[in-house]
Structures are given as structure tokens and as C-alpha cells.
Image 1: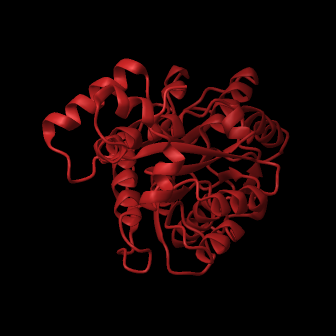
Image 2 (image 1 turned 30 degrees about the vertical axis):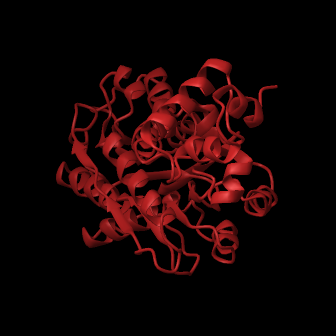
Length: 346
């Protein structure tokens, strides 16, 4: 394998000069640097990234922790793929590599986290799928690794986060359905301890109360965030003697499952049952009628996350500014909602 000694020998210059040129260090004129880089390309020489990282005290990489094997991931949710694409564009411009750090949904996440921290794999971490009480955040707070969470948590500590405005989404959904005349409104969130589910459900219950509606516990539902979860919720509601006239759901795969089961039962979405989904997912646009939902500027969100974590990585964690961003979403109404067919008896 070609090494730095062979490269220096071919160019008839010192190993130190070659090293400085390859690592963009001062003390090498532009002409020599260009010769070194050209020869390195010609003979297929690549500087050892691990050794370079040790010398610089930096990996030049930003890690994004992604849960694999979760129902939403297995269901083909494209949220993170679009987000990562936007992040990579920004990070590349700032000379960072984007590294995925997958953790198995059903596994103990702390084991993989300890390995990541111990090995110094990245300069900073973006932690996703935050939980209501998240031991991963506690572990990161106790380390020296700069990090940002994509999602809020009740885990205490001084750290940066960026999150979607789940509360406003829930409130807007309730307000619009009540304005149409609905009183029996089902609220569906994912099972598990994802913090977004609690933010959404709590905000929906508060909004219902402000309209004088005491949301019965049997209409605050939790299900697996998948099409199958939506099917199970729909089947449950269809067997009830007093069904809700509207349903709001903070999972796109679940919304698809709800549609499937309601349509199979002969219900007309928007007339017999009003449905509000969550994000304007391209897959949901093929449903008829397309679900009322909320548009998200995903490219802009990815760029914001990338710029934020790059600024955090560039500074000592204690000196980096704290970032706390609630990201807005825009309400988009379709024919999937309408007035209830008959007065509620709640």
C-alpha cells in the first residue's frame, strides 16, 4: 500500500512538507501543495483519518443518532432521510462529514453510547427520538461530547435542543374541529416514551378543556406508530356504540392505517369521519381525500440543525450558546374534515 514515504520520495520533498500539504497546514506554498495533492490523487494515496484526528484533536465528523428497527422506521417514514440530506449539504460546506450512528430500537441504547463516547468517533452528536425521561441525555451531559437534541425531554440539564411545535399542531387541530361542530374528538399518539406523544396529547387535552370539552380518557388513545397501529385504533373505534366524529393523529403511518380501515368499513373520510393527520408526508398525498395536516419546511429545518450543531462543535461545550428552537408547522386543510353528520351527544 502506498504510504506517505513513497509519496514524499516521488515528489523529492520531505515527509513533513507532504504531511503539512495534505492536512492543509501552514508553511507550504500553494504550488507545492497543489503538486502534493495531484500526486496523491494519481497514486491513490489517502491520509489516515484516525492519525490525523489524533494530531488535530478533532474527527471532522458530526454524528446523528438514529433508532433502527422502530415501527416508524420499518414503516418507511422518510422524515430523517430528507432531514439528513439537508444537513449533509450544510455540513459539507463547513468541512464536516455526516456520520450515522444507528442504535437498535429494542436494545439498551446506553451500551452503544458509551462506546461512541469512549472511542471519540465524532466531534459532536445530534440525538433524535428523545424520550420523556432520557438516560442518553444524562450520559451525554456527563461526558465532554458536545451535543444537540432533536426533540425536547423532561430530563433536566443545560443543553441545546430543536423541536417541532407539537403543542400548536394539537391546539390548531382541536380549534378547527370544534369550529366545525365536533365535540367527540379522538386523540391518537404513539405508544412508548417518545416525548412528542406526551407534548401532543397534553396540549390537545388542554385545548379541549378551553372549549369546555372534558375529553374522556377512552378517546385519548395510544397505538404503535405504524399502519397496523392505525388499523387497530380504527377497529376499536368502529366497535363503540358512541363513536367519535373526528380523530386527530400525530403519526403519518397511523393516519394511513386509519384511512384504510375506515374506508373498508364504508365510512367516507370528511363526511362520516373527519381526520387530521400530522405531517404533510408525500406518501399520504395518495390517500383520497388527502389528509388535513401540517406542512414542514424540512430542508430549512435540516439546515438549521446542521448550522446549530456545527456552531456547538466548534466551541467548548460550556462556551457554546444554548440553542432552544420551536420549529413551526403550517396548517393545510383538505376535504378530510367537515361538520359532523349528526349532533354529538357528549
